[in-house]
Amino acid sequence: MFDTLFRGRRNDRRAREVASIGEYESRAAEALERNAHEFFRSGAGCEQTMRLNRSCFEKIRIRPRCLARVGNRSLAASAMGCNFKMPFGIGPVALAKLAHCDGEKALARAARSMGVPFVLSALSSVSLEDVAEAVPKTPKWFQLFIFKDREMTENLIRRAERARYKALVVTVDSPVIGLRRSELKNPTNLPSKVTLANFCPPHNNVCSKNITEYVRNQFDPTVGWDSLRWLLSITSLPVILKGVLTREDALMAVDLGVQGIIVSNHGGRQLDSVPATIEVLPEIVQAVGNRLTVMFDGGITQGTDIFKALALGAKLVFIGRAAMWGLAVNGQNGVEDVLDLLKLELDSAMAISGCKTSKLITENRVRYESEYLMPRMHILERADTSNFDEEENAVEHQVREDIKDDEDRSSPDQEVEVLIPTGEDGLEKFPNGGDGVDECGKNVSPWCKTVNTDVVELVRAPPRITREVRIVPEVAKVLNRNIKADIARRDYLKNRYSNRKAASMHNLAGGTKFTEDCRCIM
Image 1 (tube, one colour):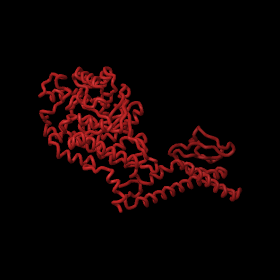
Image 2: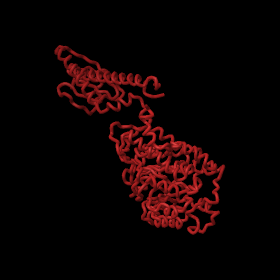
Image 3: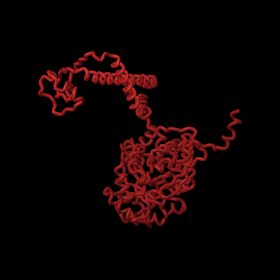
Image 4: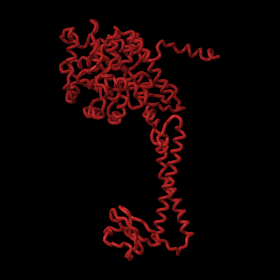
């Protein structure tokens, strides 16, 4: 029966030999030489940030909406004046020929066939002119650094303009090359067929054997915002900053007239212990608003990761290592399969969560783990805040009505005498001009408010003085009414809080351990 029902679907959907980016990573580790694999895989320091880039996605939950009419979904997106079939693409990765002989050409062709953006690294193993010739009509962006040799930097910009690249992606988080322990133990030695092609003759007169060392020495620790102003002044191409991790730098980019930023920590390869990019993305989006295009990279391994990044404000999402794993396993076809896997997973997440287009993936589609782990009592209190004042006023009104009924039933001639201790910041009440009420007579505050000129006035008692004051019957009724109302209101709120606390303990019993006051999760 089941074979009959599902035979058609199984035949329509082609079988996949590899079903996840994780499997591609495992296969790439077997296919690549150890030196090359460590070059792509490694991160700075103890690789804490590289791990955070992945693990922080696990702390975000997707909130699916039902019955949202999600037929004919569209993953289309646009950024920097370019239209793409999907809201993710391939970010800049150096020396792609270490993974496959076609290198960056295979990456660019895969991006063209899938209709996604492609960013070529200045440290590529295929020159920017050769990549442009391989995919002439595909929107391409060129990534570069502001090198010590400003003339060489400007030369790269002019070459990118002539090759019709659509934007410049300036990496700003690399005044020096990050310290990677794996490279300290096993320095990357390039094979004879792999080199930094953008710096080879005729574009540079440096000997081919010394190109790697020459480029490494060109990283400039003195680069500042004035250097970026210089770059903006010499090109008409849109400029995107890659490597922004703080709202302060994002706002500086806005002020300088930059058209976009990529929230990135360089895949955890530059400085260890910086936050994961998904952690800082909301802060930056909130700071810049719609004044420039915010994009994202770091830690993407599945379609739901892309969904979460889009929900938190990114317009485009870039992958790096994932594309290299596909390239290492099966060249251009492997990269296309990686992109297709991400497309399939993102489309599934959009359909089940109720998003017909990528523009509908907004912040209300996700929640942080901490919001679901807080005690239910706090959630209930937050939900009832809007009605809290109305309930309190209704209770106080009912208490006052009950007190009024009691007073009406009492004898009007009954003498009431109340002794009220007053202390610091307390109110002392006494008949106006009465004898023996304030025995000292010297501690009366000069600022008084008359309540009833014939009966009583209120004065602030002197600090740290406690005494008993005789109250006339008319005043006693007012005080009794206020005291009873206050006590009744406090009792009501106390009972209300206790009931909610009991409900919280019941709902979370078995899965959560509470302290004695039921306010914290242990």
